[in-house]
Image (cartoon, rainbow, N blue to C red; front, side, top):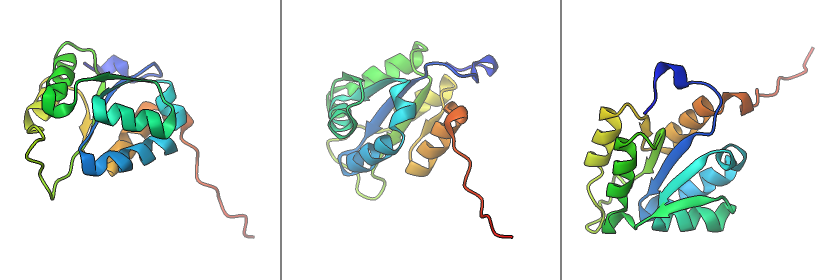
Length: 144
């Protein structure tokens, strides 16, 4: 759980989950932000964690697959203060019958004041917030 004093450079504990249709997008995101993510403690459901390892070589601790209780395991870590942030890329247009309802997990994040994002844009913002010292300023034009 984050407090007002927690916004300082440290080893962040971030949970990552992606529905099947979003695993490739999360892997591409992780590849772009590999340097930042390599300094964090990453936790993921089994399928997401394996996709991230294969795409990036990052060290990722995994729990059960989401439909087998992995979401609940991550929820328990959120509730006990073991997770600082959650990135959950879900497929909003094609709900999966085998996927658990993400609402309870997101509710736990809200209850325990854990930032949770469900889109790539949110993941970009969260990464910049947790690793501001690594954000590179855009190049300026040298036109006179």
